Picture 1 (cartoon, rainbow, N blue to C red):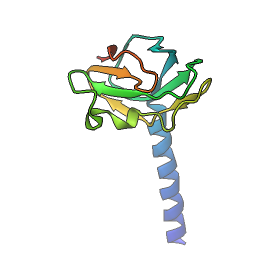
Picture 2 (cartoon, one colour):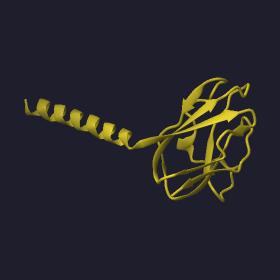
Picture 3 (cartoon, rainbow, N blue to C red):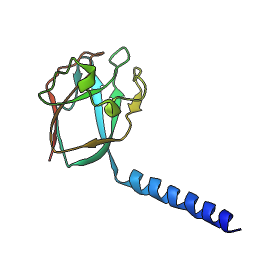
Picture 4 (cartoon, one colour):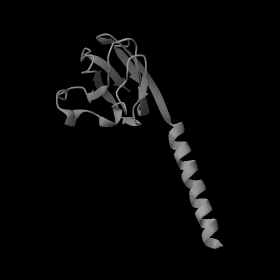
Length: 125
């Protein structure tokens, strides 16, 4: 009986922990149109974010890449891979990334599939 109670409390504790972590995650919504993001610069507080990327009639699939400013964007090892959308974004659809923790600093974001400019800036204060 003690084992059953311990298991129940462990399950409840895990659920509460996951819910608490999810509550602290904020959403950054970005829209792509042919050849560009509609938002060129964003400023946010340090924290954990999910990126929601919308494909507004680009005409083909799009994606999302986030890199710390100053790093070589052409090298995938410099990409913040948790910020990638979990699946490519089809025309007229929206997809999300995994939760991504951002520290203070500057980042650039772009889509090599669209392709968009590589000077879109995300500033984390």
